[in-house]
Amino acid sequence: MRVTSLTRAGDARHGKDCPFRSKLASWVTSMSTLPMGTRLVLKNLLFLSDFSDASELAIPYAINLAREYEARLHALHVLTPVAIAYTDPVTAASAIDAIDEGAQSGIQRLEAQLMGVNHQTILVRGDSVWSSVRRVLQEQAIDLLILGTHGRTGSLKMLMGSVAEEIFRKSSVPVLTIGPAVRMGAHNGGRFHNVLYATDFSPEAAAALPYAVSLAEENQAKLQLLHVLPQPKSRRGPISPAESVADVMHQLQELVSGETGLWCRPEAIVRFGEPGNRILAAAKEGNSDLIVLGVKSPGSGMGIATHLEGAIAHEVVTQAICPVLTKRLGSLSAVN
Image 1 (tube, rainbow, N blue to C red):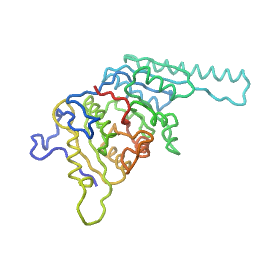
Image 2: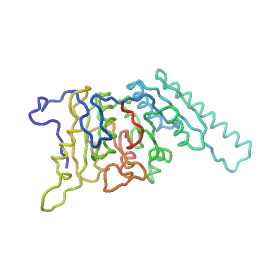
Image 3: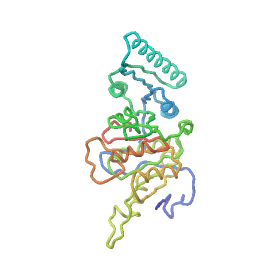
Image 4: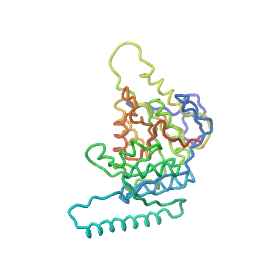
């Protein structure tokens, strides 16, 4: 079941499909309150590359975001220790040299691809990819991390790729993940035309809203606001506010209102069912080219099932046909 609403009856724009100006209005908690007219500021972006096809697919998004926000793009490749078994020292040394030469070649290709963009390429050696990423996040004051994943089968870790899975869990900044289900050539030049923001009205979801709004504004994209309700149960008695479609629609409409920043009118959507599945279905049916989610930090209480549980967020990231931006509550914010 799908319920949508664009405008209230009586609105002068009701029934019309034209751009309008809007601003952030209300927030779930005081800790996520934004001043009116607040704009997302992205000064430093980190693009993590392993020179694979998945990384190649992520490059247009990194370039477009750097240009849209006039940000500096830091392109990072990490050389980690390689176990070379059953070889003599000379052969092992030759293999290591070949790996180093391949990395240098990959950096040169990146330099050519990023020509015209404010950027720097970084080639480092580290004990692990995550330890090197964490250091760059801190040293370069990174506002957003961008990466592609290429795992396709097996566990969640294999679906995301072990490196991407670790970054997804530990990153102190929002992460834009171009997952294994995103098709090559489907990047629209790295621009977003349809942004889907999924919320359960929690503080975690509220922390992600500025990213959905700002990216929709910067790209003059359509913005959809989605909430997933449990399947209705056959019973008698009053319906709680959490189960009321009307109440949910009202909450969604109140998330974004007013007039600031040109973009397409937001659409409120209520779905029934399992959150991960419904988010993926809404993205496919709405031709979304970006999903924005708030996610719980590791070790936080999960409580009832919400969009924000780790398994659901993993499901969306690994199966979405478009990039997914995830923001953890308490992670560094680019809101100015």
